[in-house]
Length: 130
Image (cartoon, rainbow, N blue to C red; front, side, top):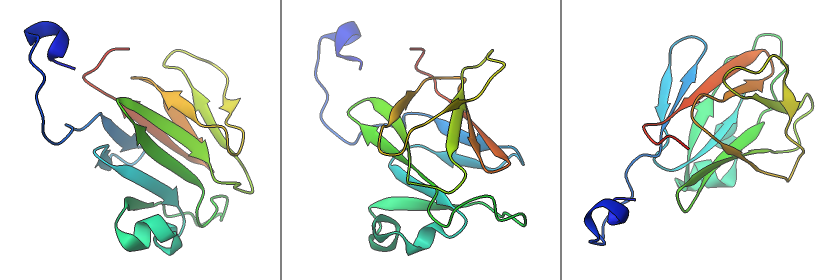
């Protein structure tokens, strides 16, 4: 928030809170909710445009059709597992082990975090350091 620097509250659309970078170099701006999976377009939020669908090609079928969800909660970016068959995992920038994300218990993504969905790795980055 710029209000700490300028002391002026600015009304308007929220700026992007970061970017998700896939292991193949594809990028997705985190400016609204995202639904991640093999067929995320089947999710109600993706169909109605409330969330952007992020389809991950998965020949091994280790990724569920609707695997995980990224939601914007105020100025935080939250990741939740959607009850996927193989789970969703996170790791801090320098971590050597993956931590499971329990279904229905969102975790806050911080800059530099990695997300494991099936065999695909996504990295979250943001200009905000937190």
